[in-house]
Amino acid sequence: MDSDDIKERAHAFWTTSADERLASLPLPPSSSTNETLHTPQDIIDAEAYGVRLALCALMTRRNTFAPISMLPLEIIAHIFECLALKDPPEKGSRYYAAPSTLGWIKSATHVCRRWREAALGHPALWRRVTFEIGLKWAKEMLARAKSAPLVIVQLHTEQETRAETDRMLLEHCSHFQQLTITRSLDGWQTFLPVLTSPAPVLQELDISVQQGALFSGATTSMPSIAELFSGHADCLQKITINNFSFAWTCFPRSPLTHLKLHSSGRASELGLAADSQGPDAFLDLLATLPALQVLSLHHCLPACSTYKDDRAISLPRLASVSLAGRAVDVTAALGHIELPASTKLTLDCMSNAETGEECLEALSLGVAHFKSDSTVMRALKIESVFLHSHLSAMNIVAQKTALSIGHIRHISDADLSLSLSWKPRHLLPGIVGSPNIPLSALRLAASALPMKDLRTLYMDVRCTEWTKTEPWKEMFGQCGALQHLLVSGEVAIHLIGALARSTGPAAKSKGKKRTRTTRRLGTVLFPALESLHLDDVDLDALCIDEDDHNMLETALAQRQQLKMGLKTLVIRSCHVHQDHLDDLESLVECVDWDGETMDSADEDEYSDEMDPEFDGEYDSDFDGPWGPDIWGF
Image 1: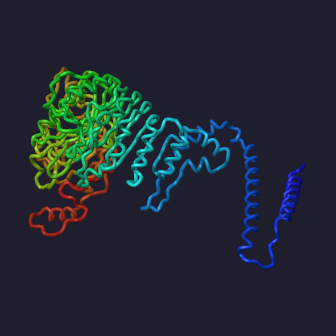
Image 2: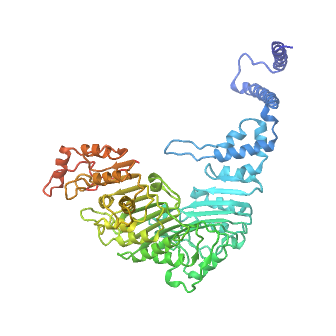
């Protein structure tokens, strides 16, 4: 039987059946009111509904022959679990006029009966409970999840439904697996019973007070968490608490691998930091966490003066440590922790002293962790940062693996990351709001870090004490393997002078030719240098030696004669003549500059602007004598 015959027989059957059914229905009268037509219309609507059900049954039977319908329901449900991770329900946005979407819920349950049956009959699919699309859907997901381990994520909550939401969550504490809650400062009162109820299967906890509430003038103080989950959270592995008040004894004795306790300055004023029990409870807590891998404590460390115990806690599996707060507190806490040699270290220290001695102690202790015979740093970034009119900072980032200039500039997870801030004693002359880094801090960092195999150096510092070329030789003369170097500002001028001079006396040996070779290879600064990046440097006005020769060209020519010529020279935001660029291109394989040049007319205009009697307006692109902060590589 061909397809045409099948269609003809099906059409004849359903047409005959429909005619017979319609013949039994009442006919409409010739004239009638709406009331008399109401009953016959309802009858026809019911018939239409029956036809739709019959059609749905036919389509269901048809779908059973589709290849995907041959898969077991368990496999279909597992596919939906992957879909739920990729396409979660999302809350709408009034700003972008975007409606709320059901995400995977619509894709899985609004297609066919079999898919809906697979989704509704698989509790694990509904365990990721979201409140983004309303409390009604959250209730539905909790009901369908049954006793499956729950993943609760609530980043937004309406004040009107907050109490009802917390009562609902309290009923399901026994099978929380992951709990992530973020609320304003006044939104936690009804949730605290959840934090004190037993959570036997909970693995991850992340609770946060919104930062905006802390800086909006709020004065509400957060109650302390005396004991998380009443001590019954045996599976808890990861804890993150932001801007909360807590006691060091509140944490359950569980196999923690991640502990992150963060507080802000405003939170500390409101009493939202660690308690003042002293460091004994702090050290006792660390002693019970031998499996700890990540430790992050920001602005909640015990005061340095309260330590009475000089014991050091060994954490053999620690992979990452991040400490922030007063420099003396950070130094004291770090001194009581024994770190494995492979631990990544991040310190953010602040000192009220103008000279920054407290920060230097933290710097010395931090870099000492990496100073061993087997540890080498291959990438280093040192930069000065102006935070505001009363605070300057120096950032030091070091990595054991070799990185490019671009990578070291944007790296966020370095082996060593130090941020040292203090009240600046002096600002750079002529520049309002510029940071000034003590030369002693730079020398300490350079002497303490193992840099013999350094490959990449990023130097963006402002140091009024750095007035000669000698600091380059003293601090970085050991970096014979350096390949990539970025410098900016006046420090770059002294580098260019150092590149054109030897770093010390030459070694003597027999033979004229051998003596000459040993002198040049052993005394040239950065003999393996391949690429030099200059930023914010006046190459024309400031790089002139006593014989009226350009010092950069002289240095590059010397290196070329010694067969140590550069492969790449990158110039950004520098004052440079076009003819000077032509000379540089003859000395370097590749010169990459951002197109900012200075011809004779520009030079005259620049000279007029620097005249004390100049009363005109500055060009909008000019940002002080150091130029705009432009990076293009």
